Image 1 (cartoon, one colour):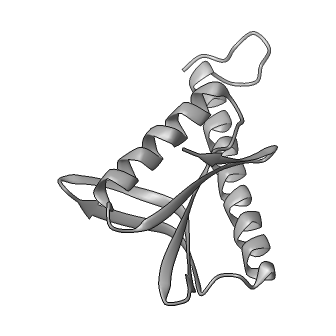
Image 2 (cartoon, helix red, strand yellow; image 1 turned 180 degrees about the vertical axis):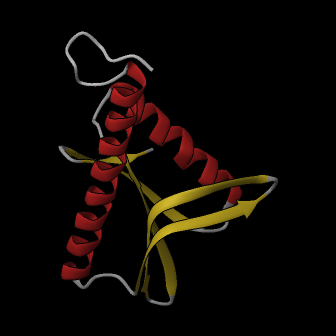
Length: 122
């Protein structure tokens, strides 16, 4: 591998560093979200990185909360992205719709979360 002219490493190394930074930002955002949700005291359960497999589809929820009102279970699904871009929002919507398709019987609300935005998914 050759060094770049600026002496900061190869293009591959730079991309890897950016990817690692993005992953760390994602995890930090998930952790901050969970802390805030715990402080509200509104939820019976709060789970991170929930794997699911149903209807031949599989995926992962970044954060899933459950609370009961008059015996009815309500699930909130939080999709966390490390950057707030139009592409990230579209991806979050697609992931939410996929989860909703595989869990038709649940009352589900989807919420998009980035370091700078919180928005309901429809």
